[in-house]
Length: 189
Image (cartoon, rainbow, N blue to C red; front, side, top):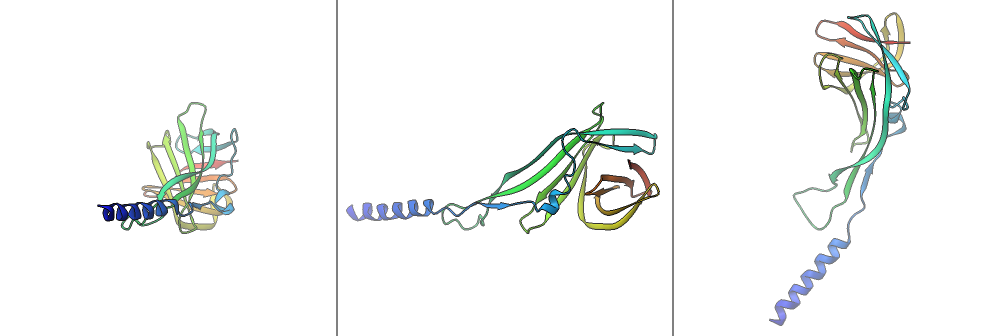
């Protein structure tokens, strides 16, 4: 009986030791370059023109946040040898809407585990479809024409059937129906 308690005590001691040797948590931060996508501050405004209705829409930034959130364990779930480190991913976003809360959306950038970032835009309600989700997939234009004005460094975000052109200096440049090749919204300066 004493031998069983001895082995049990040894096993318990090893288990406590492993539990106390928790690896450091991992943090994946946004680079300064990625944070540049969040160019607006709360109460800033920008304007878009709905080319279908000729309406000029003034959009106001209603919130802006950059924070880390927990993204699960840092180690494989197949082998468990004690506690695992937690992973925290940094995400930044700003939300915007017009005075009627009809045109609204979110622009978000999130760090990923390979050192890069994910850029997304979500548009709803009056933009045409509820819960439009645009994703950046490494498509970039050094210059783009918007109503006769040349803009530089435009990032292309896709959401079938539309595409959104985004600039770190100006925000949303234009939204194009890729199926019909018709521009639906453009920046107004």
